[in-house]
Length: 101
Image (cartoon, rainbow, N blue to C red; front, side):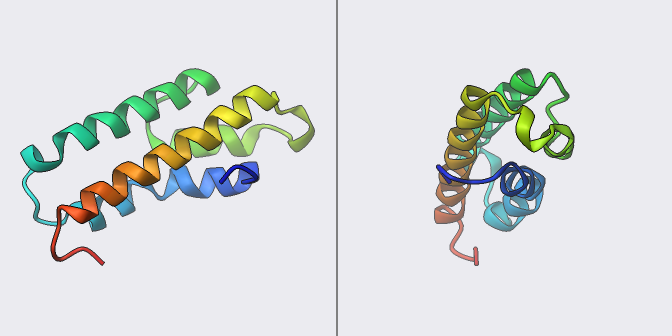
């Protein structure tokens, strides 16, 4: 993800709710609450960086709204790191779910 384009990042953020549903399935919230809190913290940080709401679709829309030549490289780099961390949390949730894809 270190070279992910802004449009790749937008897709990643937009997919968080679906991936969360798939990963968690019927696993009780208390078994994955630390990862759920971590995901919310990552979304909050991304929203602060982009000055938008914490909803993944809002974050993705904000990413899409920035012209390619207008990105602050430090913000883009941090969003890439956040996307990687989100993926790790989602994989950890899936690991707790024996029925996850």
